[in-house]
Amino acid sequence: MTDQLGFSTRAVHAGFDPDPQTGAVNVPIYASSTFAQDGVGGLRGGFEYARTGNPTRTALEANLAALESGRHGRAFASGMAATDCALRATLRPGDHLVIPDDAYGGTFRLIDKVFTQWGIEYSVAPVSDPDAVRNALRPNTKLVWVETPTNPLLNVGDIAALAGVAHGGGAKLVVDNTFASPYLQQPLLLGADIVIHSTTKYLGGHSDVVGGALITDDPELDAAFAFLQNGAGAVPGPTDAFLTLRGIKTLAVRMDRHCDNAETIAEFLSGHPAVAQVIYPGLPQHPGNAVAQKQMRRFGGMISVRLAGGRDAALKFCSSTKLFTLAESLGGVESLIEHPGAMTHASTAGSALEVPADLVRLSVGIEDVSDLLADVEQALL
Ligand SMILES: *Cc1c(COP(=O)(O)O)cnc(C)c1O
Image (cartoon, rainbow, N blue to C red):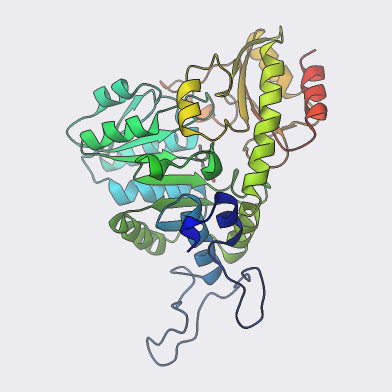
């Protein structure tokens, strides 16, 4: 029934009705690792052991599927656990995948350092260029893995075009939708086969829980995810599932404020002499602006800037803000600043994915924008 409802309504309601026994409006934190059976195999609510399934996690998974307009959702202990599951469910030794030439550092590290040991090959291509992605396909390509916008360079890929490229080559398209969130972008409706999230970021939204998710319409893929979720066991506990669900209820209102604040700050930075380049998909000069307008509701809360003064100026900017906290991660209510080259993307150093040394990434929070502007202004002095 929640299928026909608007996004915010789904965010608040999907996955759980008030508890018939107690009337509790929120799903309880089911702190139970095992579930009593009425005779051998007589499961009361479909649950037997909490690695296989826990009611709090089940509520989250149904909610995640509804948010992405998908049929099946699976929750994991982290975004990387979800990434690992998606890769293992779809790739076999001898297979090949294409990843962004500016992929999230952790995704790159897992594929480059671990999956290559098991006979998986990869190529890199810019997500903003579907022809380049097509040229990177091989007869053994099983997966095209994209982020859009990418982390940290905020390149934009045309999801519908990339789905056409992947499917034309007999591969599946995976979209890491962490940066946009399902409020701003719905990859399954644009032709993607799998959506992956680090729910640590906008979905959780309060920097208090680590988690991941996989969403798909394909029952076979979902069965493979479920098998590995149970078989390998990288599951979130019930408290983590509860916190993530609690965060999701306000996703739409938070995202609108993130977008409002980021638009204002991106505009301010665009005119600043200390800044050589502002990278924000909502700016008309961003090369992905037209595609972003087509497939995103708004442009998100992430801004990257390249400083005119190079690496030293970038490091100084990162340590001069007072409200923007110097920290990894993103997507929480509080504003964060970081130096990708030395922090989140240090694992890409020396590779084709190395990020510029003068780059600073801002995760714009939901504070009063006047305070955020004043903070950025004093830090760039
Ligand atoms: C953070 C992040 C991940 C990894 O998620 P974790 O929850 O930290 O394991 C994957 N992709 C993107 C785009 C991210 O920002």
